[in-house]
View (cartoon, rainbow, N blue to C red):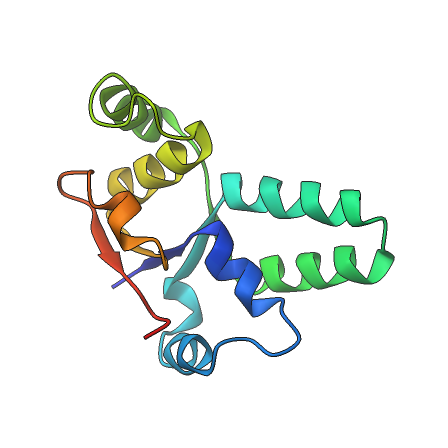
Length: 130
C-alpha cells in the first residue's frame, strides 16, 4: 500500500526530535510506497526560503529526496474540482489539493489532522503519531 504524507507529517521528520511513533511507522514502509505531494514540497520550500537559513533548505531537500513526489495532474484536478464545489468549499485550497492527489492516486493519506480530512468520501486516512 502506498502512503501520501501531508505537510505537517513531513515537517515533523525535519524536527530535531521527531515523533518516535512516526519514525517507527515510516521505517516499516518500503521507500517505493513513501510519497508526498508537489503541494507539500512547495510549502516546505517556501518555509525554508523564508527561514533564510541554508541548513533548513538542505534539510528540506534531503527529506524530499527520500520520498516520491506525486504531481497535481488532470485526475487530481478533477477530484479537486469535485471536492472544492462540494464539502470543501471553505477549506484551504492546499489541503484540498493534497486530499485530491491522495484520492486520485489511491494513496492513504498520513496526517495528524484526521478529522480535517474526514469530509472527503473515499479518502483513506491514517494517523501515524499515535
